Image: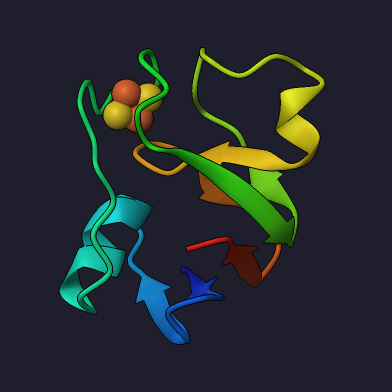
Length: 85
Ligand code: FES
């Protein structure tokens, strides 16, 4: 498990092993619009402010991967990700 901090909302959630980040955030009242939920469409992409992401999408380019993350499917290698939500 890891944690995600939605910086603007000031909400920090624990993400379970089998749980998408979007589900964990929704539980805490932070809604992320999703569409494909498979890492293909880019609807759920947000800016990543801190942390070491484990990208699982097929949408972002290598360049974009440094500061963006697809929240429907990606995970974290660090204990905390901070996103611009
Ligand atoms: Fe399509 Fe996340 S909802 S990439």
